Length: 360
Image (cartoon, rainbow, N blue to C red; front, side, top):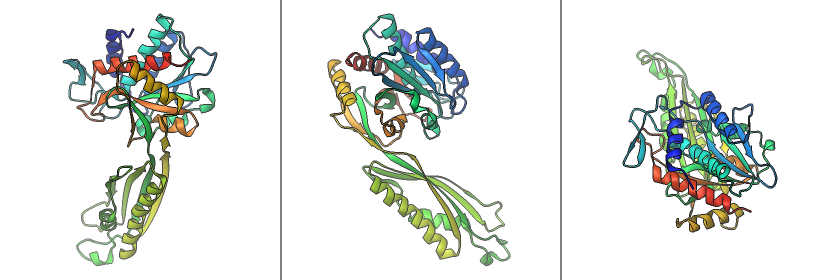
C-alpha cells in the first residue's frame, strides 16, 4: 500500500526546505498546502504549530512530528547511496524529524486515496522542538480531543516503541567574584572562572546510572587576560526517569557550586527550571498494546524501550494524552553523518498504517 517512490520524493522535498528552529515559516506553508490538498482541515496556532484533522466523528488519535531542525541545516543536499539517504556531508540531513513528517504524509495519502477505515486523526506538526520542546509546550491542548497519540521522533529498529522518557531540569548559574589587575595585584581579586572550574570538577557528570545523566554544555566568563574575572556563567542539565534521582543529582550540582563559592569568598546565583517531565507507559496501555500487535502482524519485533531523551511525547503525556514514540529510522542525528534508510521509512509507514487500521 505504501508508495515507496512517493515517500522518498516527499522526504527529499522536505529536507531541501530550510527550517532551523524558529524559522519554520516556509515549511509550514508547504505542509499546510499539502494537508489541505488531502482534504484535512488545517490551522496554525499562535506558536506556529500546524494542527490538522481528518474526519471528526469518534475518538481521534494524535499523530505528531516536529518540522524544525538543528544547525547546520541550511542548504541540505540529500544524496542516496545504496538505499540510504544522507546529506552531502556539509550539513545535517534533517531526518530528525522530517522522516517522521514524511511518513505521516504518506500514511495520510494512503488512507485518503484508498478510502481505508481508520479512526479520526489529529495531526500536530510542531515547531522549535529542538529548542526545548517549545512548540509542544506552546500548543493549545484544549484544541485537541485525542486521548492517545503516536509521535514519530526516535531511532532504532522499526518496531521500537519508546514507553518511558526522563524528566529534564536545566541549570544556569552565575558566579560573582571580584575583579583585580592580574599582573599587579591578583591576590585582591576573586577569580570567578576558577570558582566555576572547581565546582565543575566536584560535580558528578555524564552517565550517573541507567536512568540518570548530567551535563554542562556552556561556560563563559572574563573580559581580558590581564583582569581577574569577576563573573562566570555556566549552563547545564540533569535528566532522570526517576524523580528522586533527578532531585539528588540537581542538589549535588548546586551544592558543588555553593561550596566552591564559599571557599573563595564568591557568591553564586543558581536558577533551576523544569524543561519537561517523565512519562512511563506499560504494556497494558491501549496504544502500546495496539502498537505491539501491529508490529507482530508485520513480522517486526516489538521492543518496548526507555529513552534518555525528551520529545513532544513528554508534553502530551503530561497533559493526559497517552502517547508512544516510535522509530522513524533516523540514525546519527544532530551530526553531519545523519542518515535514514529508505527501507526503514517504508517499514515505519507500514507500521503506522497497521496501528491505525487496528484501532476501531
